[in-house]
Image (tube, rainbow, N blue to C red; front, side, top):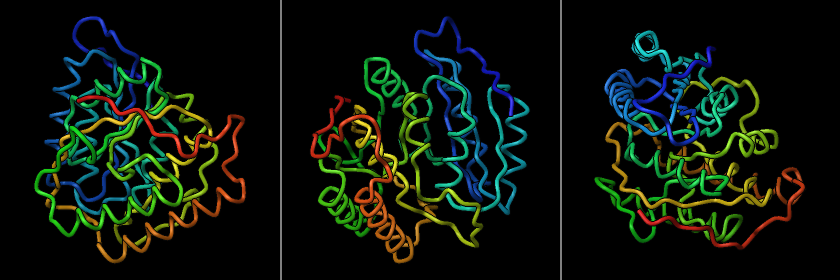
Length: 277
C-alpha cells in the first residue's frame, strides 16, 4: 500500500495522522463518510492518510471505497478476508505510516473535530487518546435505553476486573503515537490469527489495547464526546455481549499469566486524565 499523504490547506501545525476506518457491508453510507472525511481533512492542521480496512464485505462497499481511494491520493483501500472488526483494525494499524495512528467508526458517531483534540493531546504528552461517551461533558444521542444499560454494566465489570478509572472502553475512537502502537500491537493476544467468520463479529479488543497500554505505563487521555447512535449497528446484543465477556475474562487471564508484560511499571488503579471538551 502506498504511504503518500496529501497536505491539508496551509502548513500543517500538528504531526501526521493515520486514520483506520474498518468497514463491513457499509455500501449505504461509506461514500458519504469518505466525502465528509475528505472535506474535513482539507482544512485540518495535520497531514493524514486514511486506511479503509474492508473486512471482506459482500456488498459494494469495496467498489465504492476503491473509487474514493482513486480520487483522493491520501485514501487507501486495504482488502481483507472477513474476520471481524478487531482484525480489520489491527491490520490497518500495522500498515499505518504516520507519527500518530488510530481508528474511528465508519458511521462517524464521534464528531470529526475530535480528531484535532486527540492529536493535540498526544502532541502535548499523552501516549493514547480515546473518546468517551461517559462522564462530564459527554453526550449520547439516539441510543436505545437497553443498549445504554448493557454498556454500563459491561464497563462496570471491566473497571472492576482490569481497567479501573476508564468508564468507556468501547467507544470506537482511539488514537496513539506510532511508538505506543508498535509496543501495544507486539503484545496483542486476541484476534491475531487468520480465522474467517460468517457473520459480523463485534468484540472487546479495545479492552485489550487499553489494558496493554496500562501495563506499559502509557499515559491515556480521555476525551468526552457527543456520540450519535447508528441505526444500522451490526451489534447482536446476546451473541456479542457473550463474546465481549469472554474477551474480558481472557484479557484478565492473560494479564495474570504475564503475557502483556512490558519494561514499565504497571499503573493499575490510576485515574486517567480527562480532557475538557
